[in-house]
Image 1 (tube, one colour):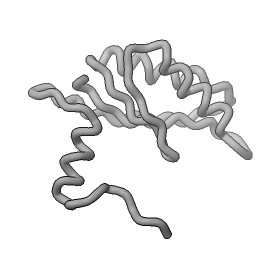
Image 2: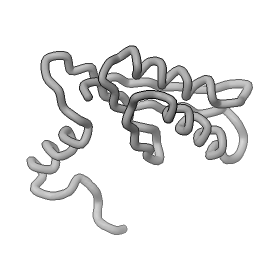
Image 3: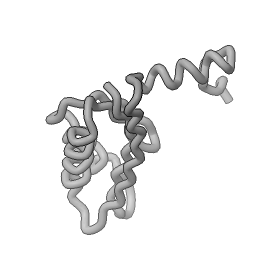
Length: 104
């Protein structure tokens, strides 16, 4: 997969957003993308930018709210292929450890 993106879809509502965010994440299942959800958003990988845009649009439209805030940040590295996990592995190689904090 060559296109990596960070997607954040959030309804502007009082209280928990979890139910609506779950709808956005579930919408990604209809597309040929790999994804990983984190507390602040979802990393998506796709073979091409068209599939990525379609998945992001579906996630945005899946949220049922009067107002929805969506942020999409795309890394379209056109001269080589590399998965998101390879980017993390490269950082960890420089760190000499995992790129996570220890318990507080």
